[in-house]
Image (cartoon, rainbow over all chains, first blue to last red; front, side, top):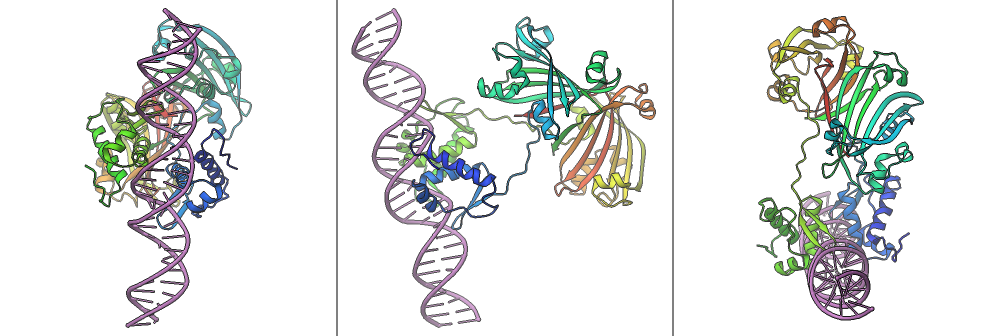
Amino acid sequence: MIDKHSPIPIYYQIEEFLKEKIVSKQYEVDQAIPSERELSEVFGVSRMTIRQALNDLVTEGYLYREKGKGTFVAAQKIEQPLHEVTGFSEDMLKRGMVPATRIIQFGETDADKQIAAYLKINEHDPIYKIERLRLADERPIALEHTYVPVHLVPNLTEDIVKESFYSYVEQHLQLEISHAEQTIEAGLANSKQASLLEISQGSPVLFIQQLTCLTNEQPIEWVRSTYRADRYKFHVNMKR
Amino acid sequence: MIDKHSPIPIYYQIEEFLKEKIVSKQYEVDQAIPSERELSEVFGVSRMTIRQALNDLVTEGYLYREKGKGTFVAAQKIEQPLHEVTGFSEDMLKRGMVPATRIIQFGETDADKQIAAYLKINEHDPIYKIERLRLADERPIALEHTYVPVHLVPNLTEDIVKESFYSYVEQHLQLEISHAEQTIEAGLANSKQASLLEISQGSPVLFIQQLTCLTNEQPIEWVRSTYRADRYKFHVNMKR
DNA sequence: TAAAACTAGTGGTCTATACAACTATACTAA
DNA sequence: TTAGTATAGTTGTATAGACCACTAGTTTTA
């Protein structure tokens, strides 16, 4: 259960252990978990170590404490973030559709003036240019053009692009994606877009541009997408 | 400086003391604060007590730590709200345009099934139905249909609607607007929309629906808008 | 000169203990 | 019966010390 000689800190192992019990509903909401002293006996560690684990779970919102009474399981927070940066696949899964991707073009080229300005790099700097047709439930839904500076993602491959670009950036390259800016407008499909999206020319479409940035404000990708208006609506939640 | 016999916990006193030094810029951003061992000597408390204070300041974002190096003052987070509920006028002013409104229709009617469902009222309950043409810099930009339950806003007048609906609701009626949900899609202008917006039929437009809710989740207005695609883009900021 | 080893200092983890403050229950005395 | 009192169990606060892993210099060595 707990490995005292693991390089993973004990308090963290206990934290994960309890978190698992909570999210898997083995503890019910508002149910008291074992007291700190009990836990310290069960795991054979000092009470302060238990407290370090519980403190984290409290700040993360999994538990709450009541002095003199005990520690209890908190109700799962609903509070979905107003807007999260998500990739296409994640977005579609949330909508209950099966995402798929067909790569139309993948290659390296030079940044033109406009793209360089968006990506905050110099004109003619090398970039990846990726053109993808996005499918939901096997039907075309969007056409995406993505531009990525080569110096930020040196060894991008078609396979990575077909899987999850974001998780590659975050996990392999250890870069932290922090925010994105989207611009949404309406327009009409041109002939190329129309044929790929399997609609007739002049059909209404949503043009969505996205500039995705790292923590240091460095843009890592610029995306121009064309969505079929009949198959895609955009949702926003706002707070006063 | 620190009162060991105060009922206020020592770690909390130290926390406030350091926080004050940070927000008053006595410590600069990225400057190292004294080490935990130094602080424990200065305050005459144990290192664990210092750590409890520092831990809180780290989770609150005032400090960050680097193993083997020290503890440093974090940059003040800017954190602008991702998205705020704003009315048309406010929105336009932010974009640097002069807003204007022409009321096309203002009256009381019965809620049909769809509108009642959106507003969470009963079918045939009385509602205000407002149709407005929105102008930016004296040029038509959007056509808005707004539906408001009469029982929530009993004495709505054309003048109020021409001024600021939100400030009337919040200041006169003392109702708290808390959030809104928008759905954005692309489409083509029909003949009525086209003539009012002074575009040709079949031109691309953005359809934006908004359901605005009070703190108790009671919807207070439902709006269907049609925006000229050539004059309006929608912006969203997202966080990871 | 350059690489390797050392060293002092840092935050990270962990222990064993102590007392305070609070809660709930059971017991006792008016 | 009721009010007060113990008591056991809980989290909250605090101590003193220990060892680890990491960082950045300094010193030693090849």
